[in-house]
Image 1 (cartoon, helix red, strand yellow):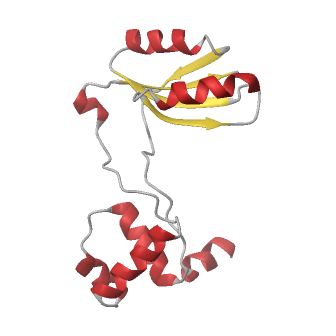
Image 2: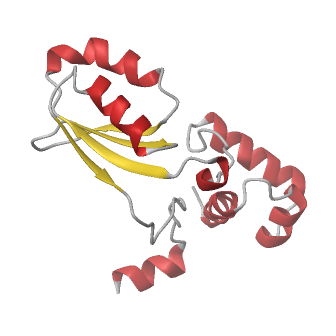
Length: 154
């Protein structure tokens, strides 16, 4: 991966709908060359997919929370299909520590969250933190080019 690929990835993380022409102008190469690079990045798995970044509050989902779950390894076979079916789960990660799973969820109300936590407790002990505000929203990872890497390292 070279500087041009990094510029493309950073631009796509900022605006996945950016035109090939605009990317070509930013990278000083042709639109067909940009298209080929994006195809290569998709094929290699660097670019997984594209998503719209929604304002959940405007869709009446006002409760964002993180739920930690103590899950026994024997429960994973039943747990993973369960969480895959729940659209309110934005992310579920297996982590180290006392709780083995952490879920990022979004619900319309605390009552809906409570009902979900009750379902989740059939798998193990939970700890829930409701989000009051978000100081840094999901923004992707700004990849450093060679110039940025000098600033980070130095």
